[in-house]
Image (cartoon, rainbow, N blue to C red):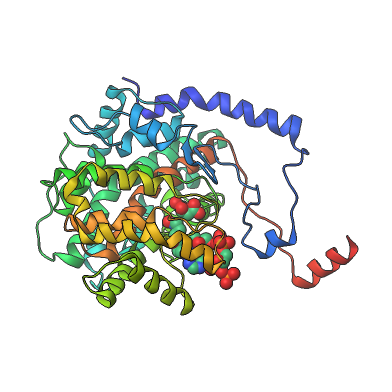
Length: 438
Ligand code: NMX
Ligand code: MLT
């Protein structure tokens, strides 16, 4: 059975040749105009990054190397006996562009399980944090501190050839991915269940099976399957989203994968990005408190207007690229539809009823370019149903997942020799001068 490193070795030369050809033959070809709106509008829509693993279409949503979520559910090997996509098969697809075999998937699970223990100094560091420190801050600090062991940083210090960069980057990325569940589970245990024993890594399980086990939910098969799906489909969302882009930017300085991904995690921790899944639950609970058990479409509409009129955003709605309901939202809804007990849950019902009315309210409000739900509108309610109710933790699960895409990019950025990112900035005076001269 091929290892993921061997699979990558096979595909890298063709991609290197493709990039070389683009550079030689098309460096000066125009892909679009840079307008003032791009410079002052968060670069929305500006085509300015190379990213291989996934592409986001405004209407259709995400495709991973050309495959939709439904395609992935069809072709990517699940855990034996399970149905959902697992992190390993998604990682294999993102990194190599190929669908792994059953045997390749299992051997990747074993590799990650072998590498999954936390070093003692990380355990001590995490245990020293006050339980009031936000779980995302703890996660980012834990990831950054692991750079003490970076194979890339050590090889750079010794002096290595550029052609070797990707191999050490891959080594760091695999170690980091393998350890994320133990790190994230320890944070959960310390904050919410102090003193509770954490089970050892089970070498017969996949990465997320172990994560669920270490969180204390190993005997809840449905939650484990939900976490598998959740972590697979949050894995990558092309390159421009704030966490992936941050991680790529920091990595472009040849900062090692631990520091690069820690930076990405701190971007994920913002309420307009990954923290929105925590905010959705908080917002919904406020709504439930206010409208009581009579959850009607009219009551929800009234609460939506109250949120908007107070100048706040409706969390879980809107998107920088998408202009239709997020297919990740739809996939998580479908998970609920196969389990009648979930459809009876009041929090899940609230998500579904909000979806019935929120797009029209947001259209009438007239500001957001996308009045439809994004993934965060749906991701927390199922966790809540299964007893993972501590919603300040939800973005950590997103953070375990986004490593799949962000670390894939770091490996490819090194294999392709992408340069340090350094866009040109302009002052308002300069923009005015340029506009007048135009
Ligand atoms: N509720 C109220 N107003 C909104 C919303 C919303 N859900 N979405 C956008 N707007 C407003 C936005 O604040 C802006 O107002 P202003 O002109 O006063 O600055 C206006 O509509 C235009 O914004 P857009 O161009 O539609 O959105 P943009 O691309 O700038 O931002 C988000 C995208 C996702 C940041 C934005 O839609 C938002 O704040 N949504 C709520 C938070 C959220 O769910 N974030 C999670 C995104 C997914 N993720 O996991 O990262
Ligand atoms: C993501 O998954 O990163 C979010 O949907 C935000 C984005 O794509 O900009």
